[in-house]
Image (cartoon, rainbow, N blue to C red):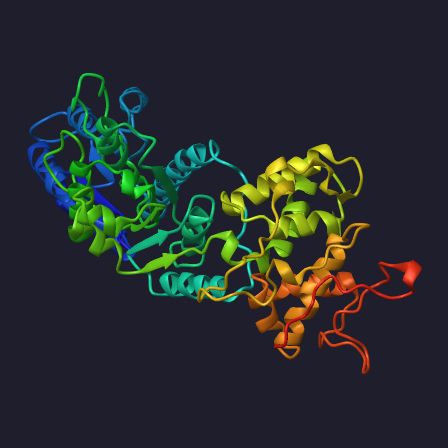
Length: 499
């Protein structure tokens, strides 16, 4: 951890030496100066965070030096030293921006207390500035939910990036998959958790403002720059900067970000000196960066630097077994938000949610659950208020197998009786057929039906099918309830092919 830097300015060598020795022993980094000119020179090279300044210097009044320091850095903390401790000089110093003062002769313990208090106040001010920005964002964030193998791999990568303090991480995935949640999880599970996490949407800030937002500016850097302003890289010191939509970052800005990553330094607009940047940079995009590199739309050197640690997020349609847990999680979260007491989703509603492909991913699922909770009056979410897109969704049964051959149940194998066909019975028989073909192996049966194993087990439970998928000895696997009572026999809607 960097030590706080203090510049002691006093022409009495014994006082300077005593203060420097005490402050060094207390863990501060200290430089001394005996004149105003020497103080200004060391101020430029040493860059102190706090100055202890004697009012009476041999070459200039200390109040003039105070004015000079505050013009160079208005956030600088200055503690005045005076041999007379007159109220007039002390008040004048405070009016001109000094933080505190003490008079000679002084007690070392009292001086240390004043210095420690000044740094505590400085730290508190920085934290307040940061949290004021954070209050503009959502006060509560969703968590990453998932038990499927792909999400387990994501969780493993988050842990690796957090534990190793990876300086650059690239998170990829479609919109709504939770890239921001991954970035925050990396930050919160790392040693940087106590430092700021600041997000920047590269697509939302105009090109001419992005550099100022990231790196800040000096006073007078442009017409409206009436004072120095820190950028996000400086405000996030010791923490993490999340650059969302990095694929939309302007090409010229990409070079400056690359330099900041490589050198760990940056320069404010209008500045003449570099500033150190001790931050982790997490980037995210839903675009195909390798393709953009090949098309000349994204810098290849930046992509390869960002891609050292990469975390791809699966779309929701590839992890439908997590939908049930996600729905329940959102219900619990929204119960707190809306003061509701919803217990869960009805099986019919859950079936619709499991069938839908979710092009908007987890974000769309959350919005759907929120819509249902606002419209549903009971304690169970029903399909009544689902959107037309979700209600129309159905699992399609393809006529051709992936290899190009005929499927096991083409149209001519389906019997349509005059009185009509039961879709639920047809679905039940499809599940029985898949279980028969897979010899009761649920994983293989789910693959035949293009659904997850959890979805298959949910529907088996719904239809009262055993885990093995086989009927009792002596019965046909496709027997169903009677569909032709007048003839006293059961109807098999599917003419099972031999497996």
